[in-house]
Image 1 (tube, rainbow, N blue to C red):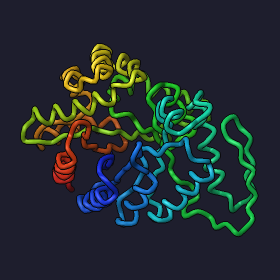
Image 2 (cartoon, one colour):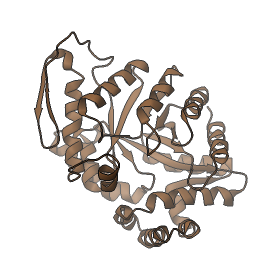
Image 3 (tube, rainbow, N blue to C red):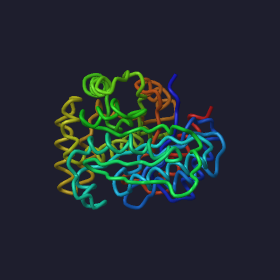
Amino acid sequence: MTTRGITVLAGGLADTRDITVRAEAAGFDAAWSGEFLNRSAVVSVAAMAAATQRIGVGTSIAYAVGRSPLVLANDARFLDEMSEGRLTLGLGTGTRGMMVGWHGVADPDGPASRMEELIPLLRRLWHLHEGPVQHEGRFYRCDITPTADIQPPYRPEIPVYTAGVNARMIETAGRVSDGLICHPTVTDSYLDEVARPAIEKGAAKSGRSASDVSLKGVIITAISDDSEQARREAAAQLAFYVAPRAYGPVMEASGFGAEAAAIQSAFRAKDHEAMVAAVSGPMLEEMAAAGTPDDVRDQVARLEQRYDHAALYSPSFTLTPERVNDNTTAILETFAR
């Protein structure tokens, strides 16, 4: 049975904490927070964990670049302790431009190889109480000898999920991760033809089973008594995600290459209306849930069958903060257990 969560990517820290408390009361299984130019996943999840008792909390995603392995390992260690073992550490690198321009990464090549080096190193650092950690790799170097008593972590293993869009990055999940965080634009055909084969390929290289890797999906969800309004809002968020050229091949593989080209052209022209208009009906149905509460219940029930865990996510692109809050409330109320 698919478990259900909510993703919080809009608003401030108080909003994030409040939504997580309400999601716990509504019976959601998990709440997730990512980060962006103006948002910290680590601080957000700390606030979420401190305000709740049962609900799972996770970063979706925290940037795996811009933090040293030791800093990232300790952030996760303390978040897991604060939540009493409710953390899932979701990691991603962002695009090449983000790695260089946002995080100052000198060598943005090989992001999948970077993650495959980082995650085993994090797991070793969580066991620093057992002895020194020496590592000399392509991207990271550690030479750490404990100089004081270091207590074992709250849990010996913290689940680590990695985000992936192209086949090579998805393969990383098969090699070293506990789960794959699927992009909101994933379709059934992309899962069957690209993602699952890539997971299997990665798992085989590590002597694992593909069944060891959970699938976490993000479902853009817009709810309104005005179905057309909800569809426009969901389409706007999809257009925002498809706008970078890097997503062209993904859309091509799912049969939406023409829509992606139109969206990207409108984005370069800074024409938001044209971006939204370029999202076709079939594309919207494959990638989002939008409409009245009854419509959305049926759509989510269909879409979440792809995943082991599905996180519902309110659009925010072109929406006012008030509308994002209202829609998030509608999601919580519509899917309360």
